[in-house]
Length: 595
Image (cartoon, rainbow, N blue to C red; front, side, top):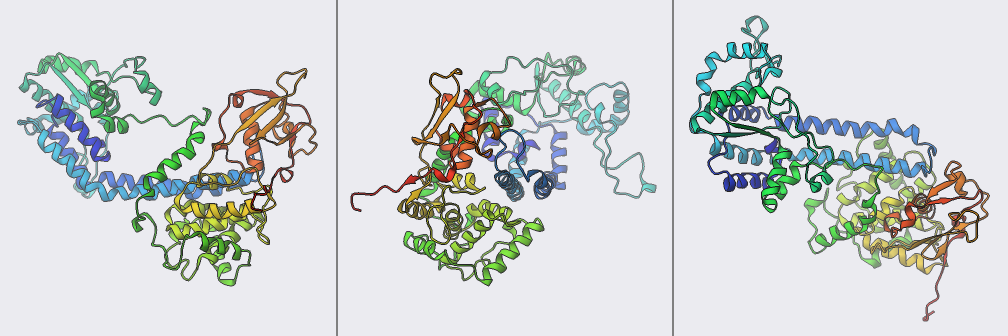
């Protein structure tokens, strides 16, 4: 069953390894084949997957409504802007919902996977079996063994089956009960081992009940490279002594071993790693990252984005990658989007208002935006109207109009699935609202958006390239520019910390520069900018925490900051040191030689 769920490459690596290293010695008992067929006919795997995906969808849809009241104001040291936290929460849950929707599509691949597994079973079933002879005496033997807790299978003695017949006509218990399944399996392989005159036997099973296992072998000697992937390795499987004894007495087997998928993969890696990379990757599931460990992924995110986009940059867009095709009247040309940005200073008309109203109702009803956005949603909209739409939507986020933060985060998370020209115009509208004042397109200093981190994540997306160029050009033409101007190249940002010279405390923080621009002041009286107030009266704070707060206030992508040893340094704070007013920190327009 587990082998059906993995990919064809992983499954093929395992079966090819068996052919190479264990020719003629890998077998699937007839009883195991029989059980697989029952589950195949019952569609068990697809049914379980569908049920689990629905549970995840319900969790994603209902969780935000529960947590929203708790995210209405800052709490805890350096929590940050509650609106940004709400956005992150919303985006994460949207991704979770989208994942659940995507994984359900695996059912379309099930017939192919099952066919490959059935083919493997047909080539690996033994040439002789005693399974049919065992059925006559199975019930009394099982009852005797189960009463004495003799393995295997006694843990299944209370297993219930289905009763498709009326209760009055049911005889001798329930129909379709598999309480004897493990014992059928065990007796069959003992007979086969005796027939083969085998001296050793390895059973591959993910069953970890103690009617197969007893006691544990320590896993302290796990290879360091494996330990780095998965710290919580369960103990190495050790077969129940009664099984070892029965194998010796009944089948003259001197060595009995049990292996689950993870330990099987660990073993195969040691013999020929290159031959089982895919199988090992799916069998050895790494631990979920500890949120307390350094967030290395943030520093590599721009590079990951660039690599991902570079791989698909030369590939022509496929309608199959998007919810629908791009309308023919849309373009992502620089000239068209620059004109649209200029025209987007206008107000919304009734058609836009109606569309936004419909969408906010979707948010209230917890309906995913992907279920209501289709090819007709923006029918008749040109680039300018789309940019106005995106800009107005984000403007309402900035004015804290109820429901629009959730709507904007849902739309932003959907852009990767929208056709590129449509996505480009909507992204331009939302991004321009963060960086430019609506009435004049002058720079908003500082730029602000609770979605800022998610805009930064998308800088290297294909659909974002031209919108970023258009906004960037406008910003750099203005009298002032913010500390960070969006760029599709995701440049590395230089920062530096400094301490107060000749101070009683050698660690007293006095300076923090981003791209050589000072953003701290020693005499800040505003609580919303004073460091000791921002960090709940803390006398010392790590450099990374201070920088994260600076990135939030000044709209700087933390993932692009060059990591320094000062990030882990504990700085002493004075009562008055704090950030400069963000609106006072800007880069003046540089006059070129041509000007």
